[in-house]
Image 1 (spheres, rainbow, N blue to C red):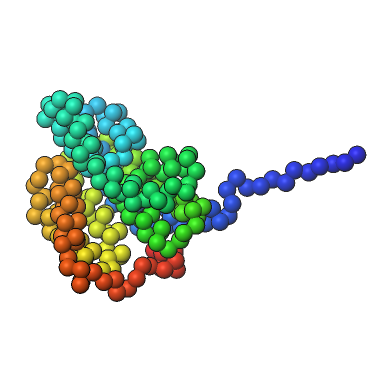
Image 2: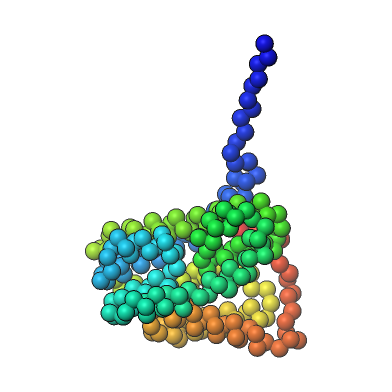
Length: 255
């Protein structure tokens, strides 16, 4: 009688878990700011006319940050549903730029991975993942790294929102929400500023964020982004040099 023995294999290979953990570690220093954003947004939901459950679920189904804030502002102002939706779409239009930048890389991923990772797309997740594409071309390692980054931000942001709604009575409703997203973004972008256009774009965007802090909810971010992009584009060709080159794989693994 012949006895066959099944060899059990791990569902996830060690290399894949290693990349997932690398992505999670990269995102970890920025997680507290993501939690603060979630808590503050939850507090805003608590003090608004938006149903608390619907507001908390918006972080699950939208995960759009500034777009969510702008929509809450419009709902509180009594705007019609069409205007509320259009406001969210306009403020979140920047995601089209991020997805276009990541499209060549993610085109090599299986369909289920593309759909899952796209769901977790955000400003910071996109920037961290774009950094990784410059130093690690392997699609398997890339997608597990992306998953580590995305789940860290999505998970803690959603948890923070739920906690903010639940603790809304003790959290200050006057938290300066317009500074949270720009500060997180600046924290990620600064380490990869390696040429003159990037420096100019970052400085202009930061200036607009500080000067335009009283702009309507959500619009500060998109105005700052557009101003930064325009400023970087206007830098003369003679100044467009990259003195340091892209970060190495060792540098990224230590991030």
